[in-house]
Length: 199
Image (cartoon, rainbow, N blue to C red):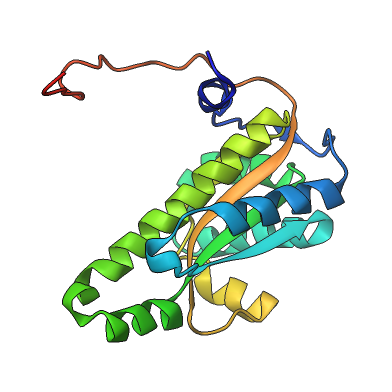
């Protein structure tokens, strides 16, 4: 198995995270910048934006998330949610992914025949960046899991970190040291999900 195939297999949703990172924060930031620079995007539009939070700023995000969820989850059902959020808070950091709608609007104006497709293709570009970074973290023995607490936390995040109005939150990649490995993965049969013609 080549290195890329091995990296794909190594990437998992790791939920038992701690703050004992195998690399210094500066090297982690460099990994994030590298993924951001090299991930593909439609017409090389590069519409994805990132906010990286470490330490107290990361904790603040998950405290805000708990507060936002407390307002919408019934009190009698909140305990599992609180436990889950505490697990994210125990990690070392979070990468928040946004799409800049000014860039998407610019593409729509330049290429009106494809205007309806650009929001979806921007989301696909953002997802490729999420996957690229998540996989890069896995090769560096950094655990991660991807969350989607948008739009519940959008306003609080925008106000706290002065996010431009044109940025829309799409996902949160929680990362940290691996306190316990991911559980065994179940694989659905490939039959019915995979077709080949003309081989």
